[in-house]
Every structure is written in structure tokens, then in C-alpha cells.
Length: 255
Image 1: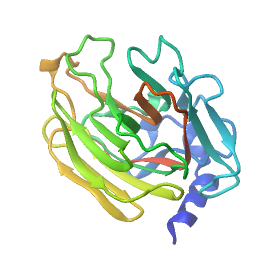
Image 2: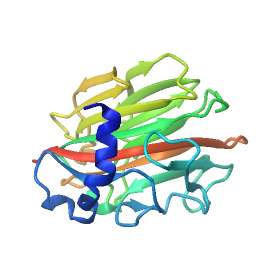
Image 3: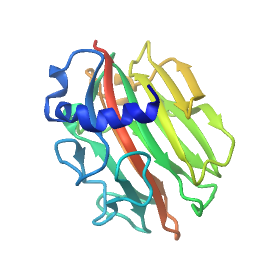
């Protein structure tokens, strides 16, 4: 079965899974899926990092099915309360009930399209990130533990478990104006973590090592992690737009 057909199957046959608690599903089952064919559901997503009108369901650019998600980031989005300091963001975050536990292995599949006229700038831009939850604590480092970045026209993957950010993979080619099918497998662990990332069947990263921050940096002893995708960048004057389709998250292995 082709991957396109698998996406269509996810879109129609597995819609029931998004209505069930993630922990009630057995290993190897999809715990969340969204084809972005209808209004975004609060059962799947959090919207507190999106400006009003930043996310829209549209039918012009789609990977499969009748529609896909369009996220448009405008200068100063979404508000001073959410985009503090010199940052701007419009990101769709998974609902809290889907947060990963340390030691679990999850597979994330989603497709993104960077428009042909997307500005190429040598500035910080994160299009997907996996964050460790601080649970309200003051921590010494609060960067994503794993991130997909698009800087200077280059897609890269980074991992971070200390103040130092490490690049674990780069894809040096023009990725604009075509759909990119991503498959990301992650085990969040302070000791035995790993990250595997494929883009259109091409290996971007294969990393083994820590994928979580330690208690020494202020994090709780029980670590949980959440996923966001969209646009997160340094302050800029230009608007940016990205398309997202065919999202799924599968629990491959529990603790």
C-alpha cells in the first residue's frame, strides 16, 4: 500500500481513535490523527499559541483528501503574552492528554509544504518541536529537546539536553513548492533516547543519546513532552505561510 493510501485510510477509518484517551490504546496503535478536512478540534489540539485567524482549513494546497491546514504568521503574532521578547509564533500544539511520557517511543507522521515564495532568511525558524514540560517550574534551559528548523533555505534537525544545541541532520536542497512527507520516531529519555527522521523517504537524522533535560536543570523527576508544529521565529517584518496535512501520532512502545 502506498503512503498516500495509508493517509487516506487514517483519515477515514481511524477517526474514532482521536476520541479515546491516549493511554487506553495498545502499543502500535494510532493515538491521534487529523487530516485537516474539517474544523480543528479541541479534543486534538491546543490553540493558545495561535493568533486569531492564523490557522485556516483550505482546499487549494492539499497532500491528500479535500483540505489541509494553512498557518500564516504575521509580524508580532500572536500577542505579547505568548510571543515574549524577540520571538513570534503561530503554532498548533497537541492536546495535553497526548503528551508523551519518558521512555515511550512514538512515531509522528505529517506532511508540510513550504510555498515557492517563502522568504529565505538566515534567522531562527522552527517548524516543528518537541518540548519537555516544565510543569510551572523555573528551569535553566527551556529550548525544545528536538526541533525541525528551516534556516537559510536548509532543513535541519537539532537535539538539546543541556545549554548546547546539536545539529543531528541537514538536508541541503530547495524544499519549497512541494510536499514533504515526514516520519519522526522519538524516544524521550535522559539516558537511552533516540531520534530518527525521514523526509520523503530520505534519512535526515539517526541519533542515539539523551533526548530530555535532567533534574539538575530544574525539571521534574517525572518527565513529559508535548509536540507543536507551525512557525516559530525571531522577529521579522515579512509574513510567512506554511501548509500541513496528514498528521498522525502512533505509540510504538510504552515504558
